[in-house]
Each structure stands twice: as C-alpha cells, then as structure tokens.
Image (cartoon, rainbow, N blue to C red; front, side, top):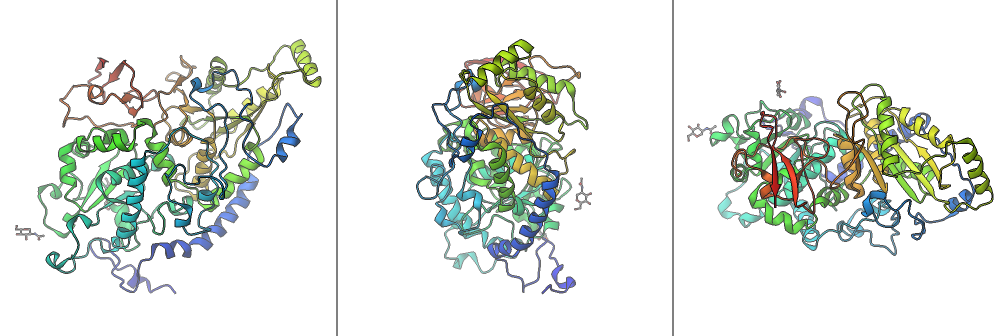
Length: 600
Ligand SMILES: *[C@@H]1O[C@H](CO)[C@@H](O)[C@H](O)[C@H]1NC(C)=O
Ligand SMILES: *[C@@H]1O[C@H](CO)[C@@H](O)[C@H](O)[C@H]1NC(C)=O
C-alpha cells in the first residue's frame, strides 16, 4: 500500500525521507520493480519488433544452412584471415566469440568478476552467458584482489548509506570500530546521454577504488532497467532515503560545490560532511583542483562526495601523484582501464539481453568476421560525404572486400563461384549503428551490386534507427545499449570521432578502432580515417593542470602514456606503449595553442 503522500514526501534538509516506516533493502527494491520492468520490456520489444529495421541477405548461399546448424559461436580458428592487414595485426587470429558455458569455462573473465555462485541465481542472464569477444587484456592479480576487497566493503557500507545526513549516533569514543573502517562514498549523479554515463560511471568507479570509497548510483535514470547489479549480494543504487530530488538538485550553484561557496571555508554545518564535485563543460579552475594533490587532500576529509560529470576523467586521475603508483600496479596495460572496469560493471539487464541475443542469433552469430561501423554525425539528416568517407576508409585499409564492378568480371566471378573454384567462402557481417537508415541501405546496396573479388559474402545489418537521440527514454536507451554491446562483438571497428557511444563499444571490445574524423567543411576529410593509438576513450576536457605541473609545461613529459586524442585535438587519452616522439597539444581553451615536441 502506498503511504499517504504527505508522509512519504516529508524530507529533511538533506533530502532524507524522514518516513521511519520505510526501511531500505536495496535488493528487495530491485525485485519489487522486476515485474513492471519485465512487462514494460515485453511491450517495448513487441513494439520494437515492428520498428526493427534489418535485412539479412547473402551473396554466397553455399554453406549457409550448414553454418546455421552449427551449435557453437566458435568459428574455425584456421579460417583464412582477410588480407591479413586487419587491425594492424593487433587482433587475435580469429574473431572467435566467447560463448562461455557454465560448466566448463571460466565465466569470471579471468577473475575480473566474482564467481557466479556469489550472485543471486536467475538474476542476470547476461552475466551467465557472455557473448563477449576473447581479449588479450587480462586483469592483473592486484586488480582482481582490489575488486574482491571492494565488493566486501560495498556490501558492508551500502547498508549504512541510508544514514546519510543523520547526526552521528553515539559517541565515537565508545565506537568499537577502528577509524579505517569508516564508510566513505562517491555518489554518481546521472547526467547526459547513455554513452557519457558509461564514461562517467567507469571514471567514478575507478576513483572509488583509488580512494577506498564505495560507488553509489543515482536512481533518477534508467540505470536499474538497463544494467544488472554488478556487486554480489548488494545494490549499487543510492538508497531511497536519499531522494532523487536531492541528488539531481545538486548543481554549480550548490553551496557544497567543491572549491566554491561556503564549504571551502571550513563549514561546520551539517552539510559539511559532503562535497559536490562538478566536472562538466562548465567546470572552472576551482573544480579542476579535483585533479590536483591539494584538491584531493581536501576531498579526503569528506565522507560523502557527489560527482556530476559528462567526461571520461580517467586520464586526469593519472595526474594525481598519490594515485599514480596504485594505478600502475592495478593497470599494467594503461589502455585497458575502461575495457576491464567496463566489463566488470556493465552487464545488460534481462530486457536488454533479450534484445541483444535475439538480434545476434538471427543476424550475427554465423560469420567469420564482424566489422562494426558506428556512425554519429550530430546532424539531423544523413551526410552523403560521410558515406563516401566510410567507403574510402574500408577500401584504403582493406577492411572489407572490394566489389567486382565490371560486367565481364562479374560473370567470370559468378561462374567460378558456381564451380566452387573460388578460394574464399568467408562470411563477413557488417553491423551498422546510426540514427538513420541511410548508411546501412547504401552499404548494403554496394554489396548487392556485384560479387566480391575474393568471393567472400558480405551481409549488412542495422538493429535500430531512432532518427534522433532521445536521452533518458527507456526504449531508446535500451536500443542504444544493445547497439553498443553488439558493436563490441566486432573484430574490426570504424567509429565516428567525438562519440562516447563509439568509445564505449571499442573499449568493451578491446579493439583500437579506425576513427572517421569529422569533416569541418562538408567535404570528405583527408585522411579519411586514422587508426587509434589505443582503445581507450578520450577525455574531452582535460584540466589545465596548474597544480603540480608548472603552467605551460607539457604533461606528456611526466606521463608518457597520456597522449593527445586522435579525434579531439585538446583531449587526452591513455595508451599502453608510448612512442619515442610525439606532439602534445596543450589545451587551447585559453589561447595557449602550444604544440610542444617531446623526446623521451
Ligand atoms: C541549481 O539548482 C537550483 C535548485 O535546485 C535551481 O534553482 C538553479 O536554477 C540551478 N542552477 C543551475 C545553474 O542549473
Ligand atoms: C560554526 O561555528 C561557529 C563558531 O566556530 C559558530 O558561531 C556557528 O554558529 C557554527 N555554525 C553552525 C551552523 O553550527
């Protein structure tokens, strides 16, 4: 029964529900909402079925039936690799999707995830049946240990989180707890689109790991409908005693804003126990002290931090000297931060998983190679030059086979195929994600217009086309998350610059993508695409670093694995192996425009 509204909505100044009849049990909350979630997802999927925009075809029907009867996603690892240049040789030899069987396989992704028996059975199909690509990036032992320790701490502290804003009960003197057992929190505030939210969740989680805090997730978005609970036997959602209105009400005008307002001057009010950290495109140099040692010392005094961000701030955490040793032990492969933490945190909910697996089974399961093309143009209508750019990129770098255009050659090629003399019987699947059907339709037509030179069959698919971005609409976010996951199964990726959607897919995949730079003049840019130096996302708005590093100095001399991004020239990203020489572009927001050549 619903309590009378007046009682339920009584809030203390800190936004706590003062309704004492309501006790928070996160897991029960989850279950309570399961039925409506499932019902609504059934409706959505039924509706989605009529919108589903996809076509399957094959130019080479020879062994289609045989393949579709194959019980496993595993392909023959001796299958010929296409032109041997794919992904600069970084990829494993075969695409091999890793369908892990509960009985005989390591379903913890190399110790990254807690053992399945730790979780509620039947709580999350995607955790039990990964479809993920095999990856060469394994978690370090230190990371595995840190995650297990984190999980224990999260279980302990999540239940105490409902006490936020309450006067400390009892005296510390009589408290049997040692001071280091005090619970400390980072609350992630939902902000911006799904791709940004994945960026900021990984950033906040890494920050929590580094500062012995636990991460709690704002309830205001559809996070609980899109993702399974990642931590065994507890919840990562902010307890309902801390209201959505309170969490979402924090903004740059809040007096608790870090390095702004009264909280900087040693406030002794009850609000002094938390800080609001503002790391968005409107952050100023005060907010950016977050990336300085002195700023971290200040934040260390607060048991609660509320962070709002729309950037991938992980590369910035490497600037904080107190974190650096820890980071290098946890992540020997610097570029695997999102890859590992993203695979740890993000498991599609059952509603999203149904969508993913049905699409995968129908269109993507049987192939030798999957090429993902992620298109985000920030324009309302499709751009013909962008289609050209994609076609030139795949041709120049031999990412997809060439189509035979000459009529005689087509006839000859078809005869060869009939006689089964063609060497390749390779099936290539192209997965296009875009808000528009235009690119998919045109690419499909290219591969219908003639046979490929090597006799490979190329099929083109697009799971959804939403027309425009509808942030925070559940149906839209469901499809966006499904698209990201399906893209992350690709062996080769082409991504649009500047897109957090593409960053998420490439990092989950463990694949350094080919980036399609944005045109500045409506013409096909030159080069048409560039190979990313790593799979890591770009931090679009790095701090000016006035703290440790002298103004105007080059951060790359201190941090060789922090490099400029390929797509956003003032952005920074992590790479594993630094080159011996490179340019580092110092942030030009303040007109510095410095470009310093560094030799290490
Ligand atoms: C911040 O939030 C307050 C109320 O929570 C609102 O009145 C104010 O307009 C907001 N400011 C900004 C800049 O969004
Ligand atoms: C803060 O402390 C000062 C004295 O140190 C006191 O005068 C003031 O009332 C306190 N404010 C609050 C909100 O407790």
